[in-house]
Amino acid sequence: MNVKMFIRGIRCFFTGLCRFYSDISLMKYAVVPFILMSGCMLLLLTLVVGWASRLGGKIEAWISSLPAWISWAAEAVSAATVGGAAILSLVAAVLVILVFYETFAGPFFDSLIRHYEKKYYGIELEDVPFKKSLCFLWESLCYSINTLLISLFFLPVAFFVPFAGPCLLLVVIGYRLGVTYMLPSGFLKNRGVREQVALLAGKKSCVYGFGMTVYVLFLLPPFVSIFLLPGIILGGTELLRLVEDNSQ
Image 1 (cartoon, rainbow, N blue to C red):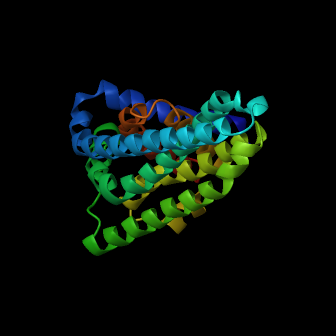
Image 2: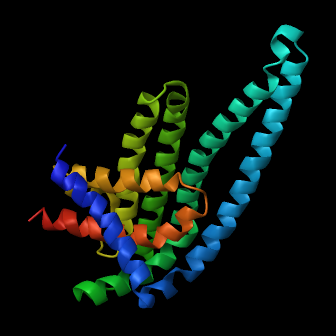
């Protein structure tokens, strides 16, 4: 692990976030994605809370029916179960939202990236042919679905193995998230998923730094991630630029 590159990956996130919220000209490009993601997050949050509450009620009722020497623990066990279920559901919700973003909100951020590249780096990105953009969208969606499946595999480990399990999930999913948010900028430069991943040879430390930061912040209260998303997109643009600069 290259610590210097890891830290530079973290800086990419904060660079994107600071520039987005300090530049009014960038904010208009996030209105539609914000509405889409808000609706999706509200729906998922409602489903998670309802599911966790019903699960806790059933567990409490079951334990209460047991002999008196153990029924006293009903409320404590119910609370612990609901808390654990809520945490797992939150992580799952973040990953589902990631897939949703790739499908519906992602294309709207292309305009944000184009404007950002032109204003801050003087680069006029050419239009990607419609057929090719559909291929890129499909590649990105498949990558996000694979991330979701990998996460579902590691979630039980994170739940049942204290400290080591969550850390493993952080590393694995953090890297995947770093790649995910680097992809949109690469697509606009006519690079597919394989070509972009190939660029990361020997430079994965910065992807870990960026992606692990995103993962941790995504675990904050649900609607916080919506406000972070435009900055994450621009941070991914900075991440790809960092990778390109270190490829020369």
